[in-house]
Amino acid sequence: MNKRLTIAMPKGRIYEEAAELMKRAGYDLGADLEESRKLILEFPEQNIRVMMAKPMDVVTYVEYGAADLGIAGKDVLLEQDRDVYEVLDLKISPCYVAVAGVPDQPLSRIAPKIATKYPKVASDYFREQGEQIEIIPLNGSIELAPLIGLADRIVDIVSTGRTLKENGLVEYEKITDITSRLIVNPVSYRLKSEEIEHMVTNLSDVMEGIK
Ligand code: PRP
Image (cartoon, rainbow, N blue to C red; front, top):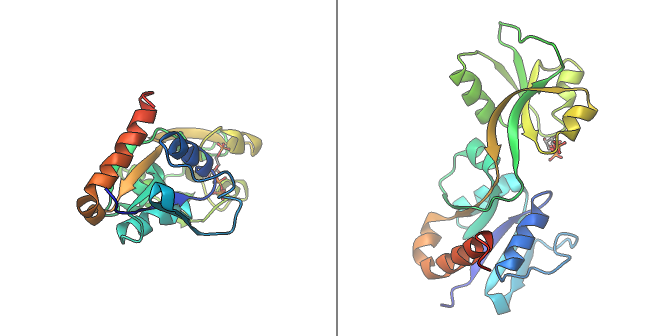
């Protein structure tokens, strides 16, 4: 067993929990990886290479085989629908996607505007509800949109609920629960099956309390 694995790790809020899980599974990425500006790090003694990527881009690196594996939120996987294997629910960074807006504001019947960084998830959801909507794509601070009248509702991640609360917004409907997943490039899965299965087992053992 000697093929090196390249792992795309998500920068930002998932990182800490993901790195902690990796460490418990036997892959110590060091304490200050996220603070450093380095984007690729080698860990020869663990036979892995780590890439630091934006959470939304982890799936792209894995799909194209630039990374063998990656850690990505289910939100990103639902939104992007890419050709990767989702092999393990890591059960970290739990949150959910919800529809929110200003309180006591019924949704207008004619194409209400929905601001979101998840246009596919939002469109799929409202289509299932039989509602025609207009998507307003945004990249962040989505909660601004209903506050300044740009949108009637938002579709966004709720974690602690603080952002909604501190901006006087309320949740209308929950769409789906989210956790982070271990994803694998389909070709790597065949060519490096032994190494990948070893890593999956190590991570599963941590999650089941065996390690
Ligand atoms: C996410 C999400 C919400 C917030 C929810 O944004 O889009 O704005 O976190 O978390 P909370 O329920 O704990 O308040 P993020 O901080 O990732 O930044 P963004 O606004 O740039 O998307």
